[in-house]
Length: 138
Image (tube, rainbow, N blue to C red):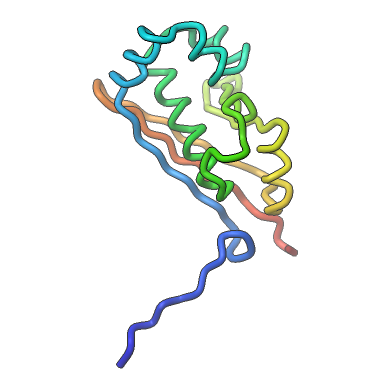
């Protein structure tokens, strides 16, 4: 009997699009040390920089969220700028994804109408999980 291999097209199948990423906090700390403001301005919006400053663990978690978002959008980071994916916090501190520019256009193309973000970190690693929900009648 041959194995069953289900067909899945991430652009048209299912109600969700998900992405996950993990990064070493030390990698972000080294990048901050080596490139400083240049790195921060390239990868983080003004709101993100104002809120998280140069905190390597918090920045690593948000960087991982941007990577996870690009995976949920099915593009990797190609064609999307880091600052087009913004991780802010609601009044209770829960991370919230805000898309701009080509990232927002890609989400619309995929029919993704809502996102949820989960961040965590240990002493050494930061991780993010992002799930996008599709319109029901797509």
